[in-house]
Length: 538
Ligand code: VG1
Ligand code: CO
Image (spheres, rainbow, N blue to C red):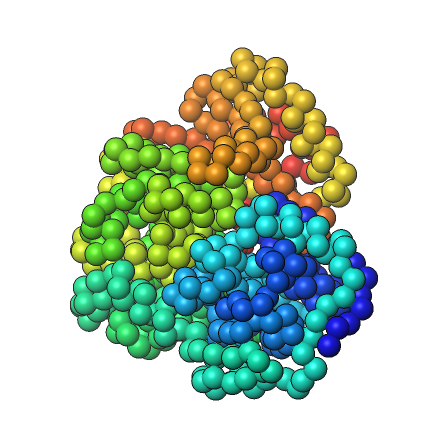
């Protein structure tokens, strides 16, 4: 049936899908308008195959029912749905590629907390399995503003609890085990025998699924397939409110895991993932591995693992990510790419075969095996490397720093800023850029500064104003940008980095003191937003 509606503004292009407060999504016609707008933007649903699943958060089940009914009414012929409505983001990306689907809807607000008073989100991924490009997002956005009606099959809810094929009008719904084909892909990439031997030899691990989507994946892969001890996976049952937590795998939000890893009872390795399973945190006994270092170390050692034994085509990192992986690319004699924040920018490089491994400072790492970042993939890559090198996480990290030097790195987040103030700060900073070179701020002198602009080498598109970069003569760098994933106020992120070729054993915050002081002075933080202490330091 056709239902008349009035436009509701969707999420502006340039952001990662549509993320809003759950109650916003629960308003009549809100989700429906976004789905219908997406069908309009992709040229209709007729004859298409779509993958649908989410991270299990509150409203996931309801939203999937609506999407299925709308897909059927828009002429979709086949929907592939995770059992119980569950699919991690990387598993959904894989299913799109494996089934040569036309795309998919992933229901998640990723690392944002879940519940009726928290966040919900939805994103459309294209036929390559990756997040919608800015061009497609813009089309969807435009369609949300002009929509007048949506289509919905007039039928009861579909039971998604068992695997198998069911019908909804003319559409086939294939309900699949969410883990099965993802596990099969991991088996192709990694040397499972070597990892099994590692665990059989007494290697211990804790994986914190943070009550989010990776629980079932981690149990099936780590405990049931690779032989990790029962209980290795904690918080492994996905809950609609993620247990009231914030499923963001970093030292702040995964504090219990951090505390364990820094204690006398620490297992050999700790890891965690986020709400939708695309991020990863890696911790060794007594040592936290920053995501930027993890990316560099994985790239430097990937040749030890079956899938990457032939070498890497290139490495891509998001602009705010540290330069550690650039040093590895240089050493390997391969290209290094610097893209704006957000996984969608890696898609073209991966599709064109220009890069094999990509990463972001926000705990995202992935490769050409899918078109999303992939939390468990990164954990398995670490495990495979540990199994081959027969060294501890700490030995591998220290060895890396001894070879390449160390990129000290930290990110400061200032959350819930009034949007006008955040804009004043960024505009003011932009205006200062031309005159910054040569100026002295505390102990540091600015070498150059710019507003990062990216020219996509594959399709020639240009993305401007992707954050301000300030390079100092000491080799330090500060980056400032506003978050695109928050749902309340503005979040300012300040990324700090200082390279040292020889001093590899300093305390991170002390090593970054000069660049932090200089960055805060340059942007007038205290004067404009009235505070100088970040809400979250990672
Ligand atoms: C953040 C991260 C970015 C990541 C994005 C989506 O964006 O900084 O690196 O790609 O989240 O990750 P922002 O605009 O808030 O800085 V996920 O795991 O939330 O889909
Ligand atoms: Co995520």
